Image (cartoon, rainbow, N blue to C red; front, top):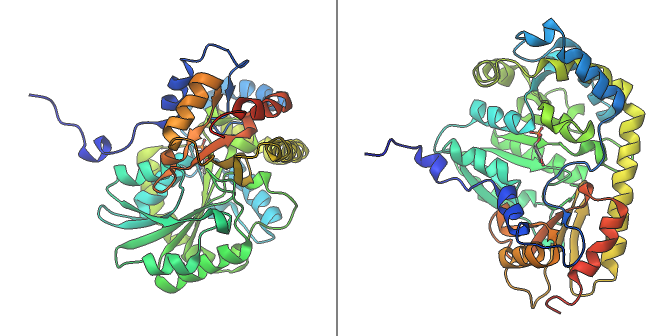
Length: 389
Ligand SMILES: Cc1ncc(COP(=O)(O)O)c(C=O)c1O
């Protein structure tokens, strides 16, 4: 007799990125070097001073020991100051918990707010790990469809019509993964208003906030002193500091949620990685200019990608921002899964097909241009040329 496996985990999709990379294993370089635009990783290295501090911190006895459940006070204070500057609002170290990455931040926040059988609204296309985390917890991900005509920005009114007595939260990712769409502050405010009025959580994953153009606050929610009653903010150090392997993220939340979250943090992570916290405590302020420089690099990549695609008639860039472009396939192309497989296996261009990001995405493909240098971006049109025109 077979030993049992969780039916919830069995019903969850396999990790998408290895599946897409497997297609590329069949590519033999006929169109030039493979261009991997599957994963949202910055294509440049971490700052050498950060690497040096990571190495130094990793060799200390302090970093080998357990730390505070909610993370080291120094990093929480540094991030609180960074948030205060970015959002023009008051933040204290106690508003924050440091987590072992933003994916775990999401899963732990959901554990604190939702139970099996509950529902959570996810704008679709969604970030696949959000849907996977919910499914594993027995929470239903309800798709809130986003449309190309609206720049893939979700509609708060439509969200209102999808709420039921089982809904616990609405999740927004801005700048978005997979579309790159940047949600206007007024839209985010409307979602917050809806959540406040209906007694729901608005979970805002702002992993890509450091790559927003301009210095205006991404939204004004934190100006409301009562934001913590209905807003949960998630952040990742992975992208802004180029340290995804060190697994550091954060949650900003109000006192009622934090009280319950402490149990989840203690059980699921005990403490976040210590050496990375020590190095990042310096980096938040110490690498401010470097972060700004990277924002400019990403903006230049976005511009270069849009310019390269302008000459490709049959493919439409439906949305672009942060790390991503979301492309509509030519009408004559097969569905997105087969199209992405063909591009990877025959043209050496690796992207993720829309269906990996939820329902209704059969005509789209995500290309993470953040990974690519200028020459790789310039080579994309040639990889698409003559296909399905
Ligand atoms: C929207 C979003 N949230 C979270 C993550 C994961 O962040 P972390 O590496 O901090 O777990 C990603 C990574 O791609 C992401 O795109």
